[in-house]
Image 1: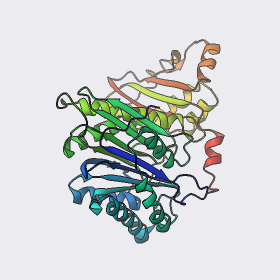
Image 2: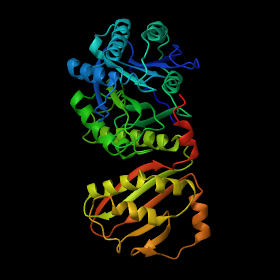
Image 3: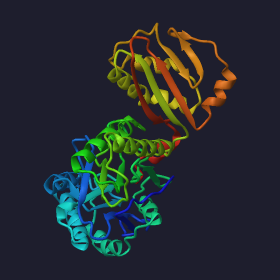
Image 4: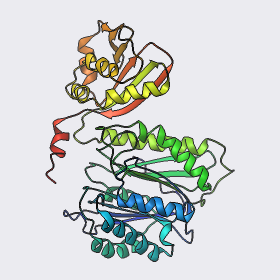
Length: 394
């Protein structure tokens, strides 16, 4: 995973005491020098039970005119379903960070991740923020440490980077391993660029990138209360020319797809990253609906875990997706191996397919044969490890 901290940014992390383990649990990404508040954009969860930090960050973005100078993130507690007390904690967090950085309260965005329904204590944050501010550093090591501090059930930190054609850079950190479903997931991401981008263009590019990356990712079909993707543009890079239309979107898309793949490959209990591709639907939306139906089906996901090419389960799910479908036209393939053609079993090399299905990455392709619509979802298998992680023991 490539780490890149674009010019004009700094990062820090500390163990504030939110996690009982004593692991780092508070991270900060902020503008450096005297940059102050810069162009900001965000995409939030579509869950109506949005967590307190989501509500506060939405409000702050609106009142600041889409400008921000810092993103503060805690792990170990989602601060979701916590009522007015949770909102007060999220707001106080923004205020204390803003005071330390010389920003306005609404120029700080707040994110949380962890257990839903538990109260987030403010005292550890109040104690941790001074150390956080004192350790801000413009280095890739600091950014990588911040990525570790926002992990919950993740087994590894997630970072991504891309270069823009005009010499500017994009860097990002993220977390996410489960409760991941279109649209968005139990995932947080902060994307930074040192390009000079107005807020409206930043928002447009971010939304377009999220639509084809995080919104095409599904680990378990569950949408969280805290999902947030934030983008900041410092304008501090050394560039050769202004950005041309589409260049920022392309870079953001590459970074977001990289992070989405890292999340799928780090899925709770997962052993396989699976790409479900539907083609031949009457339109793209129908194809995406069918791909999600297949990717979220527990029977299908268990067959991936067992390396079982049970194409009948795939066909059955498409048949209940609510799209136009003729089972006599469908073709199903696992990687290069076609196992169903014209709706019935097709001869294939079973031994070679068995080897393919035991690999860490597989692709399931379904040709419906009714049109030109295409869609895909990135997913993972369903394993004993997922159940163990989510038995409610913590």
